[in-house]
Structure formats: structure tokens, C-alpha cells
Image (tube, rainbow, N blue to C red; front, side, top):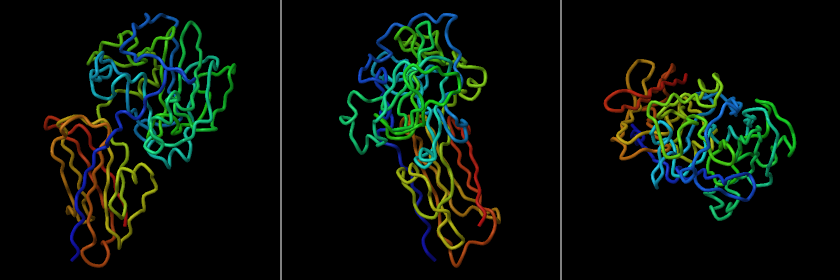
Length: 350
């Protein structure tokens, strides 16, 4: 009998600093939002629709919110850890690089006029290029839309050559302006959206909070339309990727996408990548066979701190011959203060 595959969990190093766009889509930059005094939010604020042609919880997730901590730390508008120091907007992340290659459109969040843009920055992770290569172009390829009355939205990390608008063009809410890419200071495909009023960064989830204040009970509707606010409802931790494959995985292989499907004669491995976990969270993952018996399982010790992303997998080789035909189900759980706060089950038929 071959030994079972070893249970593995890997933390993501450096993800918290992955997206750090400049102040606009030109080569200029602005001060971090925590150093600014926010303008009052007036009745002329635009209502923002969801800015990506994706479905939260299925094909995309919110990775980061705006930072409301005035010092070197970071906290989102709900006083949580779903952000990083001086982050100036919201990051909407698609699942992996294969999804980026397939193409997800970035949409204008409100009617307006294209005020500025940049194209021509290659879609290469800063893990490959290094941050010096994007100095002054941290936003990557970007578009700024002027909504009038001093309001504007900025969209960063757009795919090279995918811009569909020109300076001066009028856009409506929902107009495609580009595709999500990997340009600028980022190491995973996403769009960074910043909202400004008279040049000052405003948190669209909590526009009445200044950049030094958070509110654990803030509802988060903010400037969003009803449908967008529902899609963007705050969640402290979600599963980004989950599935079965035939060989041990790494963070890089999950990010690349297109993992090989297991067969009756290969190892059976279940993997999960979760984002925005909290310190103290305990993760468990198990595979149950067609007969209802657990064939592989594992648990992680409590996390020592909040994690922007974390992956784990469990697996086993067939003890002899092939796996019995039938349905194999994996269940992943995150326990927080002894309560299950995240749970996901997924299956494969062999």
C-alpha cells in the first residue's frame, strides 16, 4: 500500500502589499487616504453600480477595502482586517489567471466622461518584474471617469490593450471600459476602484466616515446602488478557489488555474484557497468517499494573525487498483471562536 499524501497548508507571503495604485492613471501619485481630510458627502454623489461583469461568490470576490487606520496599521470601514496600510479603494478579484485570460469586463460604475487613461503597461506580476519596474505606474493601465460636481472613479490594473474608451468619451453606468488585467503593482488579476470628491479619496462603502474612522456596525450601502450593495455585502473571509486535482498543489498552481482533474487511478486531492481569514481561525478539510467513510482529512492550528490568503489540501492515493466508482465529497470549514463561520462542500464523480 502506498502511503497517503501529506496534508499541507501554505500562507501567502506578500499579498497584502500587492495592489498599491498611484493617485490617478497618469504617472502622478497622491498621499495615502489616511493623511487627507475628506470632503463632505453631498446629495450630488453618484450612485455606483457594480463595476465588473462577474458574480461575487462565484466568479469574483472582494479582496481589499479602503484603509481607515491613520497610522502604520490597517483596518477597513467595518474595523476589520480586509485591507492593508494606505490602501485607497476596493479590490475586486477574479479567481485565477485562467479567468483573466478568458476575460472579465470592467464596467463604468456611473455615467460620466472619460477624463484620463493610460494603456501599454504589460500584464506581468510584480513578483516577476519587481516594484521598481512600475514606479510611477503603480495603477498600471487605468481609466478615470469624471461624474461631475467634483466626483470621479478610477479603475486600475486593466489588461494591456483592452481599453475600449478614449478621453472625452461619454459612458453610462455599465458601459464596458476594459478588461481586468495584471498591469502595474499587483500579483493577481483584479481591478482596483478608487472614488474621489474634489480630489480627495472617499470610501464608497462608508462615505460619511473620514479616513481615520471605522464603524464595526456600518451597513456598507454607501454610494452603491441597491443591487451593488447586496452583491458587495461585507464578509470577513470567503473561499476563493476549491476543487479536486491529481497532484499536490502550490499557491502558484492554484493561481495559474487549469489544474488536472483526477481519475479513478490517480491520487485524489481536495484543495481550497480562502481569503481574508482572521487570526485565531481554525481550518479543517476532509474527503468522504461514496460509502460515507472519510478517506483523508486534516486540520490547521489557529492562525497566528490575519491572512490575506491561505491554501490547504488533503489527499490520498488509491490503496490498490482504482478508486471505487461514485461521488467523493470534500468539506472545508473555518471555525472562529469555536463557531463555524465559513463552510464549503464540493464533489466529484469518479
